Image 1 (cartoon, rainbow, N blue to C red):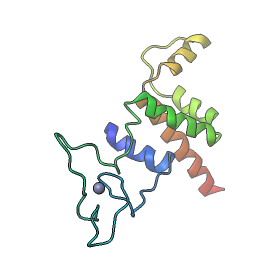
Image 2: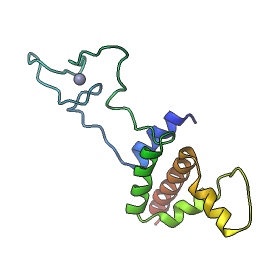
Image 3: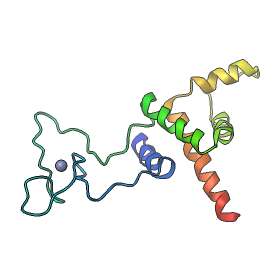
Amino acid sequence: MTDRELDALIAEKVMCLVWDEKRCRVCGWMMLAEGEVGCHPDRCSMVWEGPRPPRADEPDFYSTDRNAAALVLERIGELGLQEDFLHFLHNLPMKTWSATYAICLWERLTASPRQLMEAALACVLAKSEEGKHA
Ligand SMILES: [Zn+2]
């Protein structure tokens, strides 16, 4: 799975973000009725200089940006999944291994955003799977 594929899954399954179809997918502004000056489903009204900006409907860069990853950790806390999350994070391969508790904690603290997101997705999916069987 690429980082961006993981980002899209995090947006959908963990952050539960649903795109408001009334908003332009390019710039995020509200779309207007045909004939009005503004964004329409087939064309954005924004005029960009230089390279186009990222699309408004793209997921945040959760698996490569620590600030975006921090929002996901906050969400894990809101869902009450801290313990499950740490369990899944613990099971991810780490660069080094030591049996000492301090080193285990350090490895979790220094996990890459990608590792954090893999654990976040795994624990939320496990939780929803659990709900289905209940
Ligand atoms: Zn637009």
